[in-house]
Image 1 (cartoon, one colour):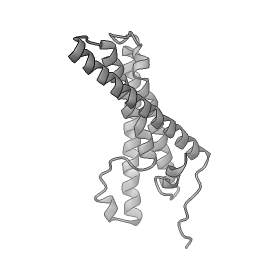
Image 2 (spheres, helix red, strand yellow; image 1 turned 30 degrees about the vertical axis):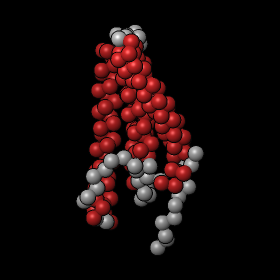
Image 3 (cartoon, one colour; image 1 turned 120 degrees about the vertical axis):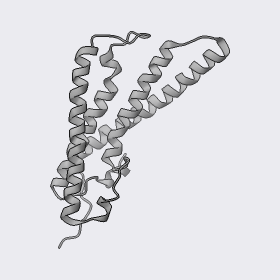
Length: 176
């Protein structure tokens, strides 16, 4: 029996890691901008009695980006919240079946989310946001981009599982 040596990530895994890192950096930038906008909004209202609807709208946009652009990297490196009380107690074929079921449910969720997002944007994409007149397609773009990348990571995890490899390649985490 050969020992499980850490495998070198292939081109697709390296590309996913790079895209997820870029997505994470974008989410961090959006967090900084959102924090600044919220502080600006509080100062404007409390000290100058001025409401800034554009700042509130951009903060909501940033909130979307923070959430949806961060989740692909968490899933890629298996750092997401997971309830694995039962899976951690079993091994062998039973563990593989349970992990496969979990990964397929995640993939199903991704597909349903993207389908529903497409249906929603076909109707709401024609409209704009109230304060900035930003097209809804642009407003919801971080969610769509994040979920497309999340789906790609989910597919990669399923592929790794089917090939008998660990679901997440934690050796990628240290790569820049």
